[in-house]
Length: 395
Image 1 (cartoon, rainbow, N blue to C red):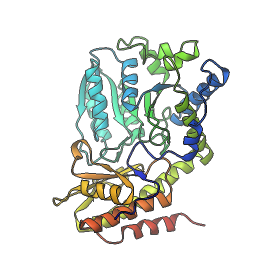
Image 2 (cartoon, helix red, strand yellow):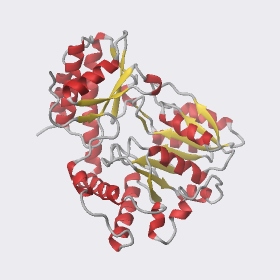
Image 3 (cartoon, rainbow, N blue to C red):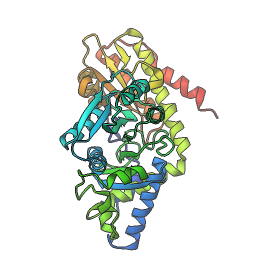
Image 4 (cartoon, rainbow, N blue to C red):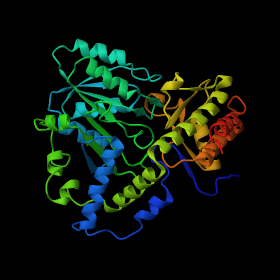
């Protein structure tokens, strides 16, 4: 017997739930790709992407996922043999660094603990020791969806400037853009990248890159440049060069609708919604953890992200049993533990097109699953989440 009839809920960190309005926006014929409406669509999206990144710099749209956007960033500002510094706090900055190595860069990793954020003091010490400025770029994620950590991007940027180091500061905002504050210019970020399938509520397939003037200047001498990713090629007069060929018209229709929805809600309200729902999840997990089988992967509450919570499962219990139960019996798809946490954790996403009933429903299903499978947990997690929202969401 199951109770999963009805709409399946994706509680995994990407792709996230796509709003009905976004799905409907794609259900129309393609545009003439040489027409003024097509040009206007592109130019409007590029302007609004720069607004989301909070930069006066240019933005670019790629027909690619986040891994493609990684390559776009690297190939446009690096030359073969350049050294990059990777700030580890989970899986994805390291993955970005691996891409750089495969493309011909030298890579140094500032090893991190998957239970905490990057320590700015460690970054500063390493940069001050690099007296010859051999490091050309620094790679970090704002949120790592494997570990569930959020890094203090503003503080790291201040540290880089305090060290007087000229390396480009490059940030992966795939899991954070449109969910939490991101201030590219204010925080001294040189290049930022993101993707369509998380906070931007659009199907996978679009990658975004935002570029400062300093990065644009470095770009001129970079020798990793290839035709598809090249910013100079995409700055050409002909509109089709914005996409290195045929535009992804229907994904652009979807993105236009999704961005409009974010602006209509108001970014501060969007950020506040994510914070409230994330804290509701954390209140539930804290109660479940009272039996010492479940626990937060990220130790410090202030370093737990507002977009995904990674929950460790110990004492020999298998998180995949919970994953299968929630999906097969109840229609809630949790995130699995990945990379170093494979087989040790599950993840609850709370990003993008989410509201209180969706999050409370997901938490309720997790609590049902814990009871049904017999995984020891503190009782009353869902009540704690409800109490939090009842206190904070006032009439």
